[in-house]
Amino acid sequence: MFALVHESLNRWTAMPNIGPEAMTPRIDRSRWRLPIAGAALASACALLGCGASTEPNSPAPGAPLAGRVVGGQQPVSGASILLYAAGSAGPGAGATNLLTTPVYTNAGGYFTISGYYTCPTPSTQVYIVSSGGNPGLTGSIDNSASVMMAALGNCSTLANSFININEVTTVGAAWALAQFLSPGAILGASPTNAIGLSNAFANANNLVNSSTGTAAGASLPAGATIESTKLYTLADVLSACVNSDGTTACNPLFQAATVGGVAPSNTLDAARNIVLNPGSNVTAIYNAAPTKVPFEPTLSGPPHDWTMSVTFTGGALNGPTALALDSQGNVWVANYSGGSASLFSPAGQPQSFSDPSLRESYGVAVDGQNNAWITNEESAYFTNNGYGSVTKFNSSGQVQSGAGFTAGGIYYPYAIAADSNGSIWVADFGDSTATLLAGNGASLSGGSGYTSTSNLPFPSSVALDAQHNAWFGAQSLASKVSPSGSIAGFSCCQSASAIAVDQAGDIWLADYSASSVVEVASNGSVLQTLPGTGGVYYPGGLAIDGSGNVWVTNYRGNTISGMTGANSGPTSTAISPSYGFGLDARLSQPFGLALDASGDVWVVSYANNAVVQFVGLASPIATPLLGPPAKP
Image (cartoon, rainbow, N blue to C red; front, side):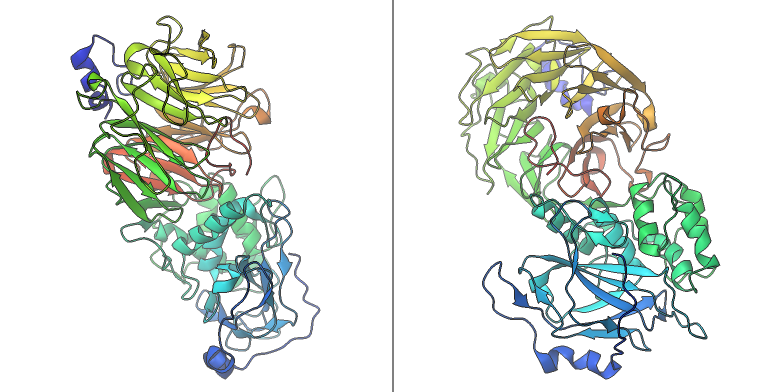
């Protein structure tokens, strides 16, 4: 890939190739039981009507619901049904049960909910939980270890819903909502992250179909794929406990899903633990499945890890190099080839936008107004003598930059970053320059930009600190450039391919040639060097999540790596196994990486023209990224 990236530069200059390839709820069960006749199930909506007209954001009577609880392929009778509104008191906090009358499943596992709840607002995110019940065993059995869940979505859209609650819907919800879910089936987000929560529910409905209890979801875009075999395998693992009396049959699962010495006590909490620790006890978890599995196809052996990926294509992806997210969770992608930019909705629906100014696009950033800024390594000869430009799209995909912005020293621009004050920084690889632009594309860095061949040699990545300074990965240096143009370079590494600034103000660099990650203090001193940690192998992209963890793409390893950051102490430790995460996702030359407010890790897979989403893997951040990452 990067031989192509630098081909034009080598034709025009004698500069060395420095791109990566060249860088050598507690459940209350004490309530009155209310069995529901199976015949009521089929006629619920017809008899009671579905939906109601309401004012926006006002409480409204809930639509009738019907469903079934199944453990594996066995109906679960006497299960308690709880319909929750997700909370807004913080992650994993504040969920409330909406049902005013208890609901339980009948002998066939069926239930109906009619007139028993009110939607707090039309857009309130709701989910349904089944607790306990008898999965077809002889005698009076109430399996308290069986807790299952289905993520539903907007309360106003539940009309005519039939909900099949089983292990598959439980696993899908656990993956998508892991960063918002606490033990006891309590789900919530911070009051400022309603979008991240809503998008996470959409992710759940990409993974599974809550009407049928199968994978994948009906909303999954055409051409997108999920790891359905892995999903079914984990559902099989849960089924061994669900289809039991809740005692010894659950022990293998609970032991394998123990975290920090504390074992889960129910299947939902076990699934949550597995999803949040996808590299731990992988084989033991796999071996907890029953001999005869209820869901197929199933894996023939343990997976590499328990991460879950969704692979998206379309959108005219053609050599994707970098990506960035806007405030709604839409994903902009720069394509090195094809003359177009790609845009994916939070749920992965693709679009593309073509423009003559898009040539060998390499970097992308989104500003505070949701405009996308894309660097073009080259330009048409009549624009900046062919030495590159920056294209600006508004949120609707309309070009705002004419033939391309070229002011302020633009010269073979690689990377780009948007600041919270509205300014835009550009790394100009071609002449060792930093360009600072205003939101209208005018230069804030003079006619030639800020330059220093000794302190800013051939910059290829850029990130911003809280004081509006730009930090560049510039060959073997971490280079700091102030808004006024002062430049300082600090020795850090062999060949910096990506850079990020964390919440503490420390700078993290992906050192491609050394297969390492380096942490540098704001004064330029190297704090730690982490060769190979968590499977780091020729790293290309790097990002920091809301908890300060560091995520890296491994360009040659076809994986991603995670490690703890400055928040965890002076020495980072691996989150991912020694070979990294994501081998089951079949990444091919992954490079650009970005995070979102749902806790997803988004990666470009250059060689197979795809964008891959690792669902719920990281701690959420606010988007767009305007300086150091912040919790949403």
